[in-house]
Image 1 (cartoon, helix red, strand yellow):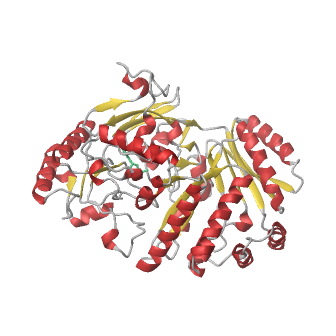
Image 2 (tube, rainbow, N blue to C red; image 1 turned 90 degrees about the horizontal axis):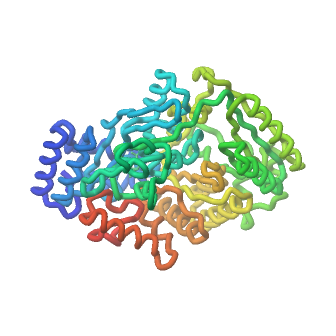
Image 3 (spheres, rainbow, N blue to C red; image 1 turned 90 degrees about the vertical axis):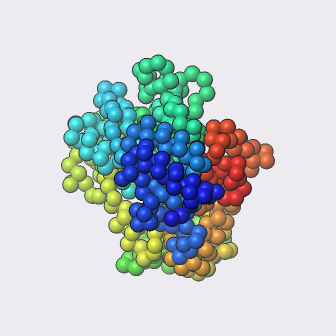
Length: 543
Ligand code: ADP
């Protein structure tokens, strides 16, 4: 059996015995084949078992009281814990801990939907509630809401929101979270915001309460185990439709993005994207052994490999030859049908001012929907969670992917600048094969109104040398982007300490603050050591 860091085998056995007393023997997992279920299926160390972030055991409570009991035992024996909701955080570590040897606190059994409030459009859930089950509950109970699931939609609202996850329905899922219940590292339970009043009347209606708002302290952090969470819900609209606007001129990218962002600022769109399809991931298809390269790909790769990355004129001409736009934005509209139609008319008028642009209206969906009538890739954006994404990602002839996910401004200049920075790093440090995988623009998605979240996927090969080289280039990209203010919105466990080290303002004052809070709230350092690069005192600077 693997041991937690700094814990002897006798002490660990006693702790496990105590866990068994708290949750029942059948809910403490110590056999290798059981604990292996918590391994990261997409580990960047696939061929380096000694570097994998493996758990020592797992414990699955069913109540807040049991979570409190587990935390108290962990303090008594100094056993580090790593809480997960459903642990489907694939590409960012799955259900594996940031620090090897942690005991996973698996919250999947705490799967009650505590309230769905149709009138006030919010719900309260436990961490084990997953999106697909939630969809079933909404449909069976005729609740008029869309499920705000990411792709794939197998995780949980709580786990996703706590890791700053996103959806194509609500965008920033933590932005919809209102009111938390948290078991602190010493076992005490708190409710945030107005949930701390004697009655919970406004817990999920008003986000702040009185005094400092602390909900964010529990996201991407290691200061508590969240046991309940309220979420505002998105109502099913009468109609939902999208549009895209494309151009064969590079110079149109900036005005197109400005226009779509203007509509966002006016509150007319809930989502927009921007990018350059012709410059986008030309080699990506190569990883999929079944898929041929797109016809324009070799031309695009040649331009991306030129010292200047290809002039606008060269890209424009390549795009025209292959009929692939150089500049493109899209927007999504939902609401009453006549409002949607008026918004589309207005969009058409606005974009007519960008002379090279062509406006295209996407499919319109009228509610109620029949999921069978909707192509699987469209379903998550319409509030129907599914796993279709695996049909594209899992086909790849690799051992999975992890993500480098920086954020840039939702402007043409910034999108261009970050992609140029990435291109230069990949060209300078990547082999031919790596360039094939990593070169190319990623589409910017404005799940946050004024920023694009980008995702560069890094393939895993289960070849120690190759995987090391890919990790090195991922780290170089993290450093190069952080130096210019493009931080990651989220990072795989293996890179979190690296990412946090990029936050250097005033001698890393923010990290030092996190560490002070950590030491005060969790003096024994038992909760998720190393999460987001925040280590307890006794393990500090080891990450
Ligand atoms: P999902 O349920 O969507 O698959 P995860 O369970 O993988 O999400 O959670 C993502 C990350 O968020 C975890 O690795 C963990 O660090 C943190 N986390 C998840 N659930 C909780 C929770 N209930 N309390 C505290 N942290 C959590």
